[in-house]
Amino acid sequence: MTQDKNLALELNNVCVDIPLYSYESTNLKQLILRPKNLRANFHRALSNITLKLEKGSRTALIGHNGAGKSTLLRLASGIISHTSGSFEKFTRFEPLIDRSFLVDDELDARAASEAYYLLKTGKLRGFEIYLRDILKFANLEKFERYPIKTYSEGMRTRLQFALLTSFPSEALALDETLGAGDAAFIEKAQIRFRNFLESSATLLFASHSEDLLKEFCDRAIVLNNGNIVYQGHIDESLDYYQASRGAN
Image (cartoon, rainbow, N blue to C red; front, side, top):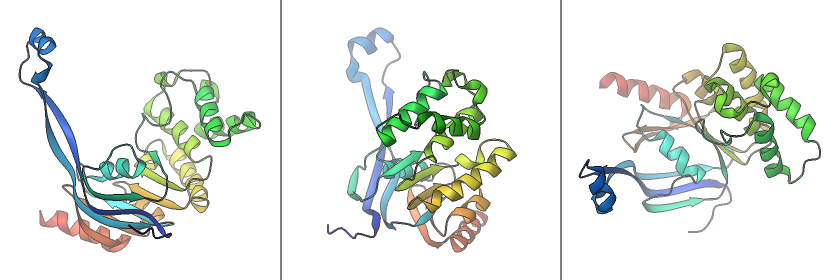
């Protein structure tokens, strides 16, 4: 496949199968002695996906829970692999998908920030100023030394969002993050996110909030049961999705 320099992703007839493991027996001794009893069935999370995403595009993923939005984000981020078809990625997507990404539960906010700063810069010069900005934005100044596993979901989300938007990114795979937290944080996050997007090239964004999708995306992909059923302008895509829901 010849690379188009303007492309971030190119998928042709891509399928993703997720294994679902089950046991033939519930007898613990038999399970230990006979591991072959462990069998896998597969759920097709994405089916024959064909699409191209250009660098600099801001694309919404629209669909009901289980439609395949998170699977597509994980595929773009390199967290999972495709089962069949042709998948080419020309841009590195940073994932902000759920609470488990970016930060280790055993670390505190300082250690997590230091690890991310080192990953991005390769040095610690300037880290203290960076840390103060992270803690202030995430409203975690009083919790700098608390293990992240003791944080509430909102605290963890604020830390993740602050870290991920602290450096420019080639591309971002985002799932619902701006919808977490109180109204004051959401307003502050939207301002920071706008600034972040000005220095970042590509966005792939899954959310149930039409307002957020319209704010940050200009085009959309509508998914249903792992299939792309519509692609187009964000307004037209949302209209299609609402009409399809009304018809069901």
